[in-house]
Length: 147
Image (cartoon, rainbow, N blue to C red; front, top):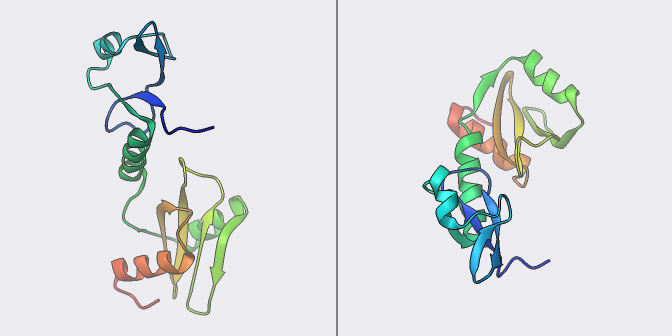
């Protein structure tokens, strides 16, 4: 399915669409509730009509802002709990460092990563498309430690 010409109702800053837009009788209406833009704006004043691709880029940015945070230092027990709760993904183990992400996503492609550098542990939410090496490097820079 091509999304190139898809128009949607989207409220900037939200992590989800308001609705897909469907053209009926010469005007766009929400697929959810069959509302015109004016009717949708009565309850959600910031809702706009826009191409799906533009909304998707804004949703990605909103999800990153909502879910991604600075690395948080955790305990060894917390690290092991995250390691054992679900099968780890992209688990990279070295002598002085290791990293993996939890297979269940928080949203879209954002997952909880767990990192060990030496005898210290951190968690952070990042895209699963990242490499373990890049996540270890990010944590090392943040924490001021050598990976």
